[in-house]
Image 1 (tube, rainbow, N blue to C red):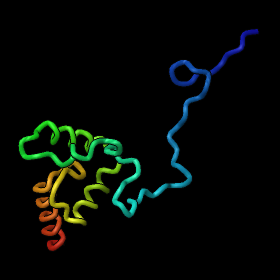
Image 2 (image 1 turned 180 degrees about the horizontal axis):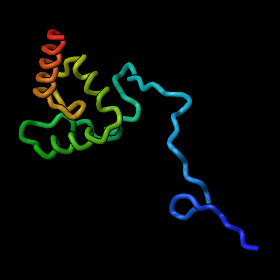
Image 3 (image 1 turned 120 degrees about the horizontal axis):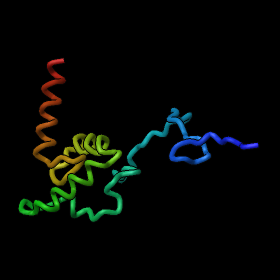
Length: 111
């Protein structure tokens, strides 16, 4: 007698996993030193995030790393809170962070 096996994704005999909400949510908090667990920049040379005015390659590379970071928004919020005057944080340079802070203050007053 033939035995039929219901196949899951890609022909495996294991059923595929469905997306389910995790039972326990983990809150990611920065350490007192300012490190963010799970940051894409962990292990990358920090000098890359503080490029000089003429170093366009380092600027683009830092922004690429930030673009794929799971804690990018938290990093940007911390940089705005601390008023970081230099470097790329959350994918934005100091001028872009100042402009964002101005827009947020302006929108906060209007609301």
